[in-house]
Length: 175
Image (cartoon, rainbow, N blue to C red):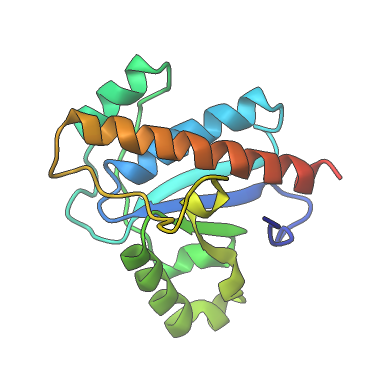
């Protein structure tokens, strides 16, 4: 899958991952993607962060089950939840939603204020669309109301999508 051109060719390629509360899926994706980019040797060329569309957990750490799942698999876990705002569109190269509801919320932000920031809607995608095996449902389900196995399933989906996205970023930034 092709990636949009960098908004600032002299700066890092800026990627934001967005879910509902920014305590489960998007911070997991942020940590996995950051690790994959480092392993690929382009960690200094890409800046990754994450946000939630809702504000309930702003200032909180990651959900303990997400933290535990990441830690067991060797990923970093430091995180403070933040809420996405339209102003962030000003310098993002790619904004990735974890599910269709959050993608719709981001599209509304782009419709309302994207022109103000020169943000092209084609820079919005689903995170899992980069996984080679996402199947007919390219969403990453919210594990919040389930058990530990849901966090492991999310990690597996995130790792697959992250590998695909990392490959696309390597191709885009090293050409």
